[in-house]
Length: 338
View (cartoon, rainbow, N blue to C red):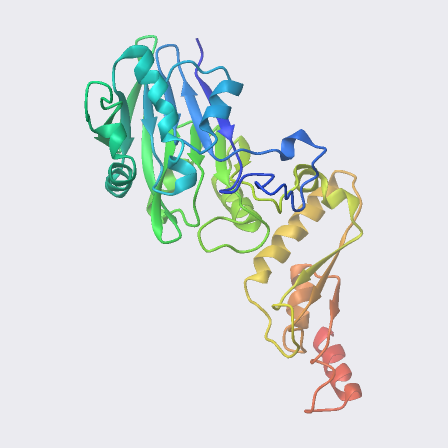
């Protein structure tokens, strides 16, 4: 049997749709926009290794007809990775043998405190169903007497650390992350598959957004990338096909709401990435797309924006201010572009 890696769920912590039926930007007619919470399964000829127990675990295992679990690796302490743990009890009932669970120190403490009945025997009727083990840097999984290496690597996930998993140096599963440490970059080179967190379009303090995810994909250059932990912002077809349907893309370079703000420097990355995508599309015979910037555009930065690939700009306080007349300000902008 060949090794299989099954993405059991790829939705954010509330799933898509949310429990109140909210789809956000996602088209409910597209089945790919129905997403349960993140978990995954490494399936070999000898072992089924589960990564995280999402609150949707029961539904996920039934859908994929998974009838046994041999080990569980936990990425971190959050509820959308742990709160399906009770569904593991059935595998103890079938085999009368506690399932080995592997977690780092923080996650172990959380699991023991929150789900003590899973790890402690209270009576013959209620035995311990799980055995808690410390997650190591490397674990070996059997596949027809050959050993598969699963390497755990710490990444930053907001205020906590999360573990991602690299399997035989060919597949990386990074479900919750907002920073990968430079010292670990070497483990993500020459991957065949990169499954990576991509929560939404806008910045988030504990997850990669679309811009950050695309930057990481370009950095690591895997043969194939798959996005996971997708929020209601991200419609499948829009992400896949958006650029070739557009004539112009407007990027906000200030926070919406009031005038006179300074240009946000991090917008440069978005502009350059978008320009590269447009150039690739044009080179493949697709349509050209204009890039427009709105916010913080002044005479001192407008030439820089042009050099980055911006086609046109919305100028407010750079023209209308108390420092000079509109004509004088417009002349200064024209001079900057010469």
